[in-house]
Image 1 (cartoon, rainbow over the protein chains, first blue to last red):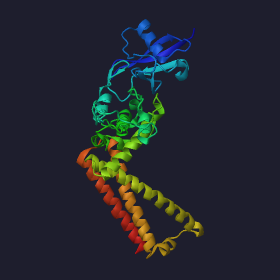
Image 2: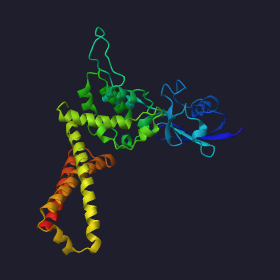
Image 3: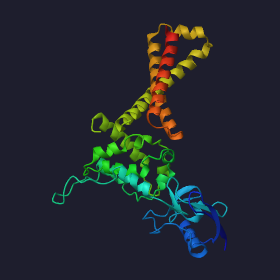
Image 4: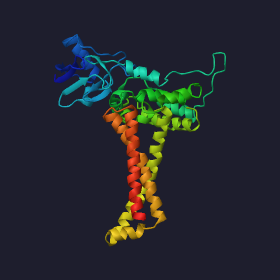
Length: 237
Length: 112
């Protein structure tokens, strides 16, 4: 049986990589490797996972320099010379080992007015949203985000500008701007405009390139740029 | 600066970029066409002297640069050096005015 040489980040921001040797198995995922280390080699290793099948978004880490879901990444896809390097997500404070602090990531969803604001009550008729309408299609394009943080960790603008809301929060805002039932359009557009919002995006498209759900936050951000400009011209924000 | 002001800055940079794309193309095509028989200061001045058309064209070109470049520079200073606030706005406006004044002076020099 061949062996994988795995370097895993240990400790906080001032920590270092620690080497482990892990048995190479068929159809082995990076999450399998990390789990093997924690269960067989060093039980103090901290990492985060839940569903193991690409639904929960909690196991994202930096694997050989790229942010990925470890549960859906086969070792064979990313391995270089039987070696693997696993680190926590970039652009987020580090708690310990492979666990990044996701608070600022989700706080920015709230700052981008990521909450739906209803315009009707349960006593009203159901809203009718035509499946083929442009708004429904725009919302559909971004609605499957599960908040894993891969886009946020891959975004250079986040690393240069700590106030930047980031691709996921802006994508969420765009799905709500596109939601014809929502009643907070103006305040949401005001929240996502400017230097901390959509206008800081450089259109590098790293978020779109690396999103495991194949969502394009870049397109969502472009939509927000158009919508905010229209809102400013109309005097809505 | 307000979010509204930042949206205007973004729009100004986009609109000036469209103008620059046009101006750069006209400038380069003219340049390539004009130097076919050799290039001299006298030849350039003969083309531009007292020309309202070229004067207007290059004045628009200079003003588009004066709008476009400082807004980009503002972003670079904010992202790379962490500049924020009033100092950043002052530098941006200063660079815009410097480009506009020096550029328009150069245009005037070949037109007048």
